[in-house]
Length: 212
Image (cartoon, rainbow, N blue to C red; front, side, top):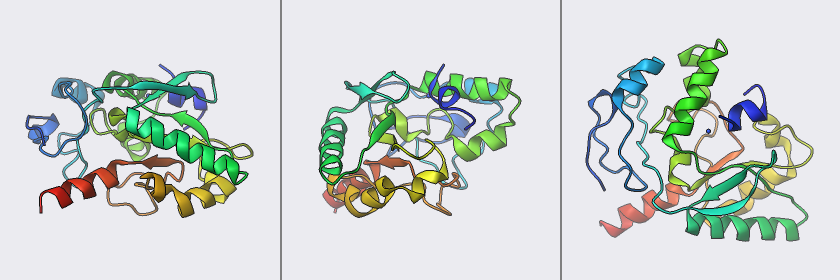
């Protein structure tokens, strides 16, 4: 992620998605999945999402304004996640730790444009897919994921791992329903993202419990 602006500027239902995948178990709202032709035009392999397994995420039904991010753009989250974020940020501040929201909800169309910009800049699709989930597969579509920064470390880099904010999140984020989905050597094959936290794992656990 070369610059913050280049990253942020322009990013149980059934159905069919890219490569013939079913979106059973997809999270989020009512919007239709991305047109497979759009993914093909971006050069995303038809096998994407199969191995390693990647969950399909629909866009959130409901969003609310939360706060401006570090470059002044208003960020939105699903209402329950917005409440959890505010509570977590407040408690961190009480412990002397400042959490900054870099990115919240991203639409599928935003993700498409993000890929197009990176391709136009000369990056190859396989390199892009190491650091960005394909449109339709990003946790940010749900409004239940946040990218977090803190003063003193470069945003959206592994430097965040060395910060007091990361140490605080590692100890406390679970109390607010957040977990770190893209740790080192994660099953999705996404590059390590210590700044990306989401509530989707808690949602999946709750869903499994309710079906037992």
